[in-house]
Length: 95
Image (cartoon, rainbow, N blue to C red):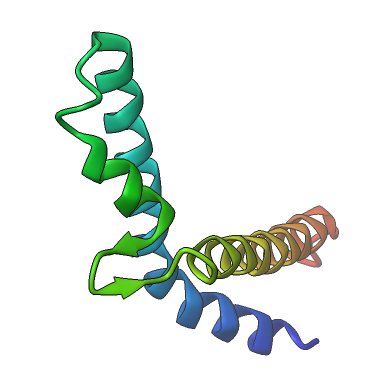
């Protein structure tokens, strides 16, 4: 894939994926803190949100898959851009 296409894909996907990834991380942390504090019953709904169950809309089967797929694509495109920038910075400069 061309560098421009990789950068465009990364640029398109990153703002879309930040919301569900942050949502998953934040709800997971909140639930773990509640569980450690012994009041997980009061925040039981958070684990449902964490899994993608939003009561009227249930994404439990697709939410983890899309989170994972988006994260993998972002990691691959990000690594490709990073390796490309490292290769170009190691080239000797012609003055």
